Structure formats: structure tokens, C-alpha cells
Image (cartoon, rainbow, N blue to C red; front, side, top):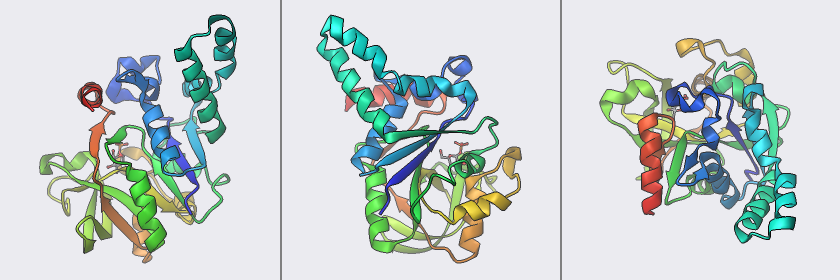
Length: 271
Ligand code: G1P
């Protein structure tokens, strides 16, 4: 059973400057609602019982946003506005699910994951990267259902334009399980076009085993001087840990770049 999810939120958001110079990118509205709420809704609908937010001191704004129920309470007693009452109930619901841990230096996604090692209870947990929105179909739910059958690790996969492989983690396939799932032979963080084994990219939904913490503890810095979760996964695969790549059905929206962020609001407003 997958009961816990983690979400790395300590990134600086440089791809969304100037918006992120004073504001947490995950709170920026996408069609009128903070991006992080879409991610939380995906978790809750997928049956997750606890979500761990990995934030930094610079991003305490996120904690404040979800701990602000008293602020709403004061307003609704005097104003009786149904919309504010709805928001109050929503914040209270989210608050019950969320725990916070800190990653004060942005040393990479692998380092962020390591901060949750004393909180993760079960053999497997879910990780969602907040820049990657997937709409129309709950990707986490689909991956959890595959995990329940196969009892192994799973990562989301999407075919990308070959020219853009150096922006993603890229899979090398072992064999197909069926048309939507394959066993992963290897995964490489942001390879150049020449060395990329395919154009199947890692998208930010992962079901990871608790034993990844052992690999992360020993991991050295990789591409760009960061500690990458991809490198820890690679080390596990080398030791014959099974990882499945899942080609998800929903629509992917890249909210981590300015053009993608703008497009995502338009896309969601159409649904
Ligand atoms: C991260 C991962 C990368 C993955 C991508 C998906 O990269 O390191 O493997 O393909 O998310 O969005 P980042 O977006 O942090 O550069």
C-alpha cells in the first residue's frame, strides 16, 4: 500500500524569474488556483494519507499558506461569504494531510528526498515534482494501481522531441510489459543528444522503494553539481531492483518554464 507522498518544494525557481524572486512558484495561480493544489488533489484522489512537503526557510510562505485557517476563520465569522467558507474548509482539509521538512540548501532532488528518510514508514512511497502537472487522468492513481499488482517501483514516462533530451532524465528500455508499461534497463540524467539511449523521458511521478535512502546517503554530486534522484535510481537498477516505466494517459503541462506556465493556465481553462 502506498500511503505517503513527498513533494520537493525547496527549488529556487530560476526558470520562472522574475515571478519567483519574492514568490514561491508553487503558489503561483494556474487558472486561479495555486499549482500545488492540483498536485495535492491528485495525491488525495489517489488515496494518499500523508504528504510531506520539503521546503526551505526561503519558502516558508508555502507553510504559511496551508497553516492559515485561523485567518479564514476570523473573516467568515464576520463576513459569511460562501466562497471564503469553501476556501476555509479546503485549507483545513489540506492542513490535515501535510507535514513539513526542510532542505535549506538547494543541492538537488536526491538531497531533498533524503530529508524525508525518518518520516517514510512503508516499503514504497510516492514522489511528485510540482513543476509537472498532469491533467485529465490521475497519473499517481494509475501508477499506484500498477504497483499494487507488480509490487515494484514505477516512474512516469513520456516521449519527447529528440532535440530536447538534455532537459530530462532519459530511459533505456529493457522490454515492454504491455503497450503502456515497460521494464527500465537504465536511466540517465540529462544526456546529450548523442549519448541519449531513447527519447522516453522521466516525468515527475515516482513510486520509490524505501531502500533508495541507503543509495542517496552514499551518492556523490552528478550533472550540474547536484545530487540527482535519477543517479540513485540508476544504482538500484544496477543491483537488479525492478523499475517500470509507465506511459501515462493524461495531458502533461510543464509549469516550470515561463512559456509552459502561461500555456498551462490556458489549457486548464479549456477543460
Ligand atoms: C527533474 C528530473 C528529471 C526529469 C524532470 C521532469 O529535472 O531530474 O530527470 O526528467 O524533472 O520534469 P528538473 O526539471 O528538476 O531539471
